[in-house]
Length: 142
Ligand SMILES: [Zn+2]
Image (cartoon, rainbow, N blue to C red; front, side):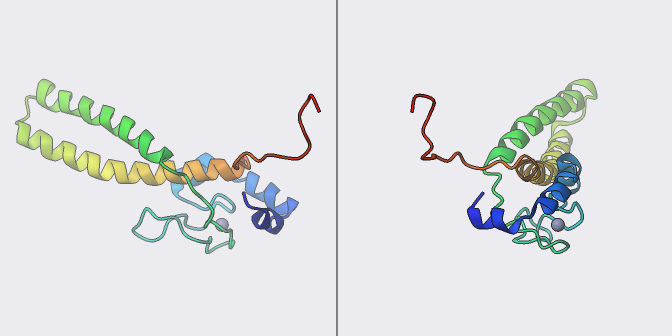
């Protein structure tokens, strides 16, 4: 977290931010600071620059590729299981099963990406996660 962002946040603000559950905020796609404002731009997977409710700066939020990895692995397993059930268990024609699985993957992935992206960013804010920094204070052997 950059220094200017830390300076903007007061201790009271941090305490208020911590009172918001990162899992609840992530699941609902809400701001990790106030738990009220929308986290994503409308009809998009892009994160807003600021929260419209509390003005919290979301422009520095970067979940990286973390959410995509979770979604690929989880949706792949679910789609394979559903495929086995529809074709192997229910003897559905392959074209019908493929249509259902395609829709499941498309809408399930978009929904899961929103949940995982928002949850990962909310967890970063909740735990004050930031890049490691080198200090001049020296180590144990100094
Ligand atoms: Zn907010």
